[in-house]
Structures are given as structure tokens and as C-alpha cells.
Length: 290
Ligand code: SF4
Image 1 (tube, rainbow, N blue to C red):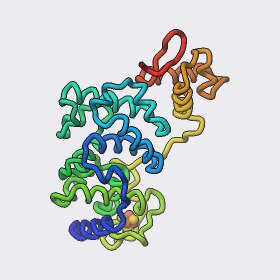
Image 2 (cartoon, rainbow, N blue to C red):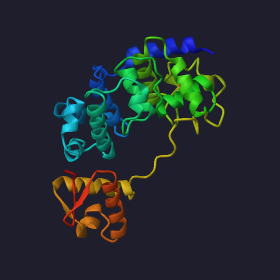
Image 3 (tube, rainbow, N blue to C red):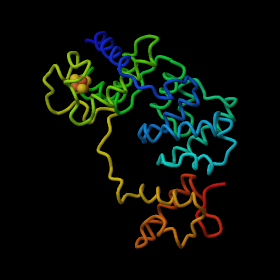
């Protein structure tokens, strides 16, 4: 295996091309956790202003836990997938109750927090504490399957390989480089192999890139994106947006969700918001939680 050469070439490329982003300047675990949760399903350009304002309002887990869920969801405005904000608020509460108001510093304790999965837990350890963990999101998983293994990987193999590749003591920079390569060069459709810094070491490229693409179906790589237009997610988003301006009488929920002809669907989606802790029914109206 050409791991040493891949490491050197990718690390060099990362140094030369890395974007300066606010969450890359900090090693504060809370700020890293907030940025990782925001970036999970939202583009960098939309995250940037929200990240700053969120941390100004909630600079510590303790301040976040002391606020209402509604306030935390309100500061999430524009990012979508508001369930992340509810999880963050719950996680902050656990940190106050069980970790002295600090983000825990072990993988086990991180994974026990609401909304924190293997990617986010390892991201906090690698990007805040600079511990040697391989951070495995869909971009990193693609890189591993194509460039390193040259075949699809099972979940355990992918994580073990990701961990093994981390150059000792360099987890922060290494993981940033891997994630950047997957996000910008080794993209899902039509990877830009001609511009790739590790093209001469990439197992799949060296084999002539035979079909099927090793990343297809490999552990951690994403399936096809579901359509947003007309989806339940779109209706959820409309309801949360409307809730920010005030209570929605139950009789008006279908209109607010954008489905005046389908009140049953609107009510089901509203019930989902309540179940996720994003809203409550009070006096015949849907409201943000207190
Ligand atoms: S050579 Fe192509 S497939 Fe291989 S890592 Fe680079 S972009 Fe991805």
C-alpha cells in the first residue's frame, strides 16, 4: 500500500489549499461541536453567519442549557433540520448535569449525548482535542473506498482504515485534508482525477477506474438525495418558519405547511414536530416550546 505517499501528497495539498474558516481557528470543543452539527446538512456559506451569532448568544454549554428550546431553535433560523438544534439543547443540558458544563472528552461520553453520532464524536476529538481519530463522513468514506482500498468497505473496516491512516499527532490537519479532498476533488459524480493531488497513488485510478465505482454502496457514503420539493421536510420547514412569527391555530396548520388540500398530512407533520420537541400544542394552537 502506498499509504506514506498518499499521506504526504494529501497533507501537502491540504496545507496549500485549506480555506480559512472560523471553526478551523478554534480548539474550543463547544464551538467545534456547534460547527459540526451546523455543517452536517447545511452549506458553509449559510453556516458562517449563524455560527457566529449562535456562539455569541450561547458561548458555552451552560448558557445554551439555560435558554429555552425555542430560543435555541430560533438561533438556528435559516439552517434547516431544526431537530439538530433540539438535540444540541438537550446535549448542553446533559453536559451541565453530568460533565460540569463541559463538552465531554471521551468518545463513549460524546456518543451518549443526544444528536452526537460516530462522525461528530470523532470530529470533536480530532478537531478540538487533536486526538488521533479518523473522522469518517461521506466525503472521507468516498476517498477511503476509491483511493486507499480500491473497493467497497464494510463499516468496521472503513472506520479502522480511517483511524489507521491518521499520521500520529496530526489528526487535525489530516482529517481536514481528507474531508476537503472528498468535498472538492473526489466528488461523488465525476471525480476530478486530473486535478487530484493523489491521482498517482489512488488505487481505483491506477486500476483504470473500472465500474462499479468502489464508493457506490461503500460504508458511510451517501445514497441518492431525496427530493426536498414537495417533501414532508419542506412542510416541516414552513411550519417552523411560521412558528417563529407566532402560534399557529390548529385549524390553520394545513395552510401554514403549504398543503391546504391535505390537512391530514399537515397534522401528521405537525405531530412529528411535537414528537421531536420542536413544537407544542397549547390551547388549540401549535407553538414553539417554552
Ligand atoms: S484520483 Fe480520482 S478517484 Fe482517486 S482520489 Fe483522486 S479524485 Fe478520487
